[in-house]
Image (cartoon, rainbow, N blue to C red):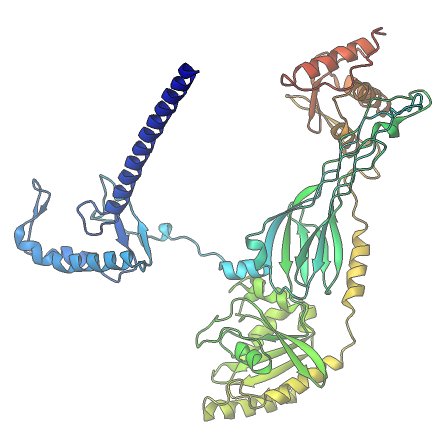
Length: 605
């Protein structure tokens, strides 16, 4: 006993010494890394690699050709007489370092100059036209009304192979249940969402898979559906084909995009008069998956249009509680803003459309991105800047662009708002003259000042009157009609026959392509020998076997059906099939349980 205790104590002491050495080594490495990190950010040091790109300083000034100092090639430094030339630079480095230590170093990045840098190389022209990158659509606008996401329906659950074993119940028979269906993907319109920005960080959407079947003929549970909430006015397209899958128009409109995978059948479903104890079950069908593109077309009653900086956002802020960005420069608004206006116990939705330019129908000034939001508005309020001397030219240019983009949009009722009359007497006089000119053409025009609110109430009243004159729009009926035109959403293989296939002779293999035959192969559970025999029988009955022989498939040629690959053989005897199945089972990793082999008929036919 004493010897055992002594051995245990020695072992414990050795373990503690080993752990102490590891901890010491770990602390030393941590200190070394910390020291390197701190020295890396010592700004102004000899080998500093921290550059502040936000400083408004021309570095070339410190190395002007007129400086008296000279560079010493051997020493690798300037003469002592040039120390004054670096005082300003050293002070700036000290300021940068101080801001970094305080956590306020903005616009700074790590910049590895390397051993052979050409920072002072002559002829470095970074402003070459070929070096400039094309500016794309701002992310704020790109993510506002367009998005691309991945959706996948849930896989079906596996069927179960089980037999009823119960006292006093002779030959209980097959008792395995079916797997549950996978969850579907639904899209639903929610008026609480007004943009597609939320999909910028949430790209993948998957439904739950179905539960596996159980004994006692227990059905697997169906997977929960996945509902993707989108703003009303969203158009959903198949990213690969461009086909419109759904149009979400009204609040609460719910539409299935992808159905869930079908659950596999258990062995109780395969019981027949000839096969009363089947040892066969199916895998669940894999859920469909695709990338979809979403495009938001705002569903609003009134669309406020006009050239940039005409006062559209100011008008929206004056008639509603919306808080759009307002500034004295063009293209302040780059995404549409919505505002709710109440008048005479009725609600109207106003949409502030970003500024349009001449050529917008051809995409100039992001015209496509802005004009599509006008399509679902019912009344247009055209805001004109009366401080401009070219008011009529701007008005006619925008009207032409709208007609070129979509003639139906150009036929919508229009009300003209002659804005900025408070800016000057000249603007007020011009507005009154334009009002008479517009009314002579039968166009309702109002002199307003969106800034101080004069004339805005009359404009809103006229807008409501124009809306009331239009027939009501039943978005739910439109959604149902569009859904009926597209037809019922079904799985790819639903309604297809096993005989609907084609053979593609490729140098690599013979490919059998067909929705029904590919689903059959995918749902086949190869762990059971009866599944293997059933597969050979289906190939013969569906005509695949004859078609492959006619296409020139020979012994040992590679055949591919969906994701399953096998070698072709014309020997369909039970013994040959068993040898092929056994070879497949032997390819599995060691320790894998092989199912369905207990009742193998030893007499091979």
